[in-house]
Amino acid sequence: MIRLLLWLLGGVLLGGAIHIVTILTLPLLAEETTWTRIAALEARNSVLVLPQVQPGEPNPLQLDPELTYGLCQVDLAEGPVYLSGTLPDAFWSVAVFDAAGIVTYSTTNRDGIGQTVELGLFNAAQTRLLARQQIDIAEGLLVVEAQSDELFILVRLSPPHEVMRPRFEQELARLRCGPRPG
Image 1 (cartoon, rainbow, N blue to C red):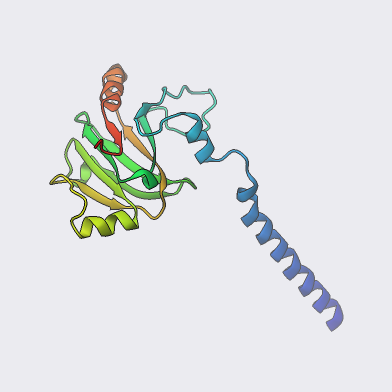
Image 2 (image 1 turned 30 degrees about the horizontal axis):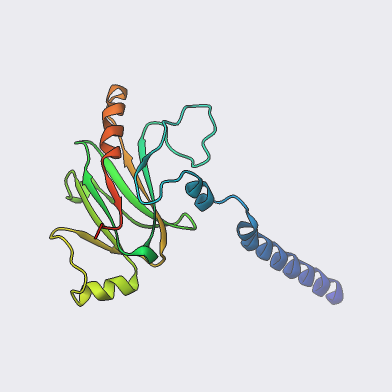
């Protein structure tokens, strides 16, 4: 009887270990990830206004059809990245994601920022240069240190009425995203 229980316990432990290893390795084997989907949109160092998600249509990025989205893919290995501009007087949020699709920073206009977005993204080495005042930044810039170089920024706007969506999309298109020139 004890031998049978030990075999059963061993089987359960081995099955659990195989299950955990399988669950943890499957995402690494995926050919299509959030990062590859973002890269295919060609939003490198500029804000791309995403088309409105239509109910019932494919939605690979799982976006809310009620919101308007702007997307910018950046690489901090090229230097610090800045997102700047003015957004409409309605709810908006900015989220910074790493290549795995995990949010590393997020803010909204309800954080007391107002309608002007001035965000600087720096990696650890650039933050050290910033601390030594070897990188000049504008006053009022919101400084964010990222743990990885490959990032994408998603700006979400919530138009209060559908008729306002085109104006909100124009505002998104005016945002500047990428390294500062010269």
